Image 1: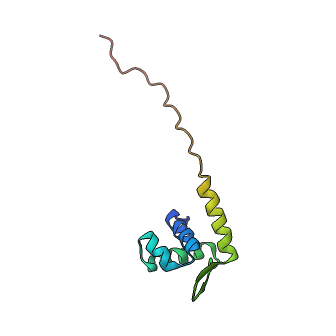
Image 2: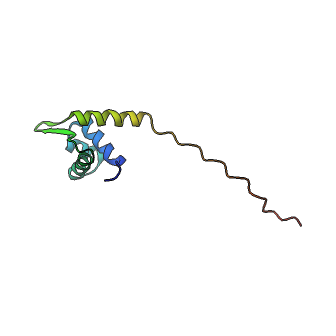
Length: 97
């Protein structure tokens, strides 16, 4: 994965909020396998474990907490789009008759 996919980050935030892969899968209307794939891809990308898995759910690791905070900040303050530059003046296409 060359860049972080937004749907993977959305999956990550949903798992973090629910502390459960299966609950996140239901909320996202996808399979638990897809959720696991998204999290595994993010863990590979960051070369860090994002969740501690336990019988009663999952908890964020320090790396996971850092990613969660950064992702939530980004969601609250999205990148501003620059206005499109006006097109340069084009000569009139009307013919003089």
